[in-house]
Image 1 (spheres, rainbow, N blue to C red):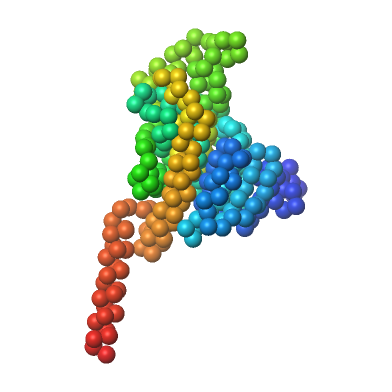
Image 2 (cartoon, helix red, strand yellow):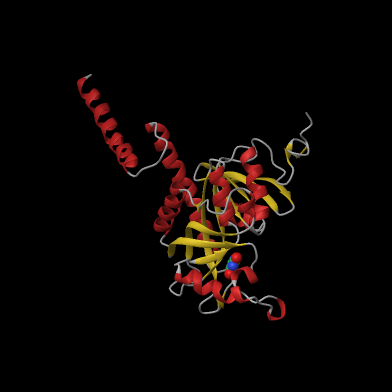
Length: 294
Ligand code: URA
């Protein structure tokens, strides 16, 4: 049966991201902005440019010896869902969004980082996958790795619930062109604030929903470039910190994934590392003992 229209490829590569099997690693960082791909991969030990097609730019390489890829998704859930569909098809399974955000709680400062534990599904894309009651929840291991990396790097960060909208202006309670507004827009920020939601961005709900449906792992770290309570805005605030944390979290996840494989466990839990550490000195001791007796 002809399936070209259902699984479109060009020269054996996925149609939109222009990558095929072997072009990406298991761990993929997902910035929205294509130009951020280079900013991210410039911190790796080695980088190979893989593809650039529309908003999708892909680099693959190693960071601290760990295989890593980065694919830009463009803005919003619809274009992110296409990248995710095609990345899954070519072997990726662990995704970390690295983006920017607008904070809606007053204790969050410009340049702070937000790690999303879950997201309010104000997007449309995730609703084309599953009913709206299904949670957009981040993967626990990816989220813990982002927290661990933030602690190691000493950055200011917050962890909590994000809201993901399909539009930057009206969907985030900003006036449209010439002050266009609807009554619900006036209630949006105060209502979400009262529910303890930390921030607005545009991709996380789709990422968390689709990654979980497909059996992958996803997390998100975003830099606060807009403070909606004070009205401050700085287009570059915190982005380098978010990039550093995202790269470092891949190194940490690899360590944890190796510990899981070594112990034959499906899920990571903190005492897995303790038992790994305990095995190190024991091994040294037994080698020394053998030396003494032979
Ligand atoms: N990205 C968003 O979606 N909203 C903001 O306020 C800032 C960045």
